[in-house]
Amino acid sequence: MAFNRKPQSLNQLLKQYIKKMPHQTELKRGMVLHLWPSVVGERIKSVTKDLKFEGNRLIVYVDNEAWRHEIHSNRFSIIKQLNEKVGSKVVKEIIVRA
Image (cartoon, rainbow, N blue to C red; front, top):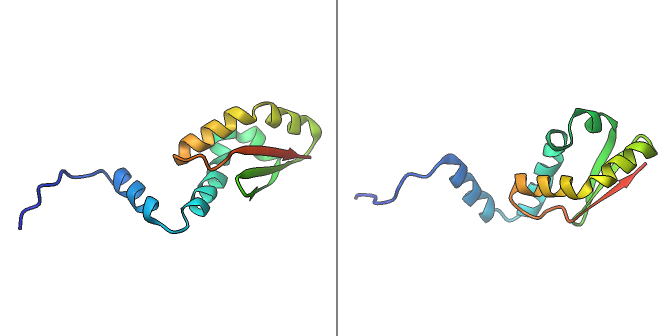
């Protein structure tokens, strides 16, 4: 029995596997929480107290109003980067609370 398929990269196979998973959205939300520090950087990561999802909204708790304003000002860029990294529009909105 001969196979005529081209070999696929591990990355392609993993993406196909994730698409078939029943809890894909929850998995991608977990990926977003994991990727938060690499997207926002060490400074913002250090002032972030908690992250959680409420539907497709990412709720971010920070230490003070100045950081709340900083993240709020950059929220569209952060959303775009997070969604690009997980390959899906998991985050529609970021709500920042101090």
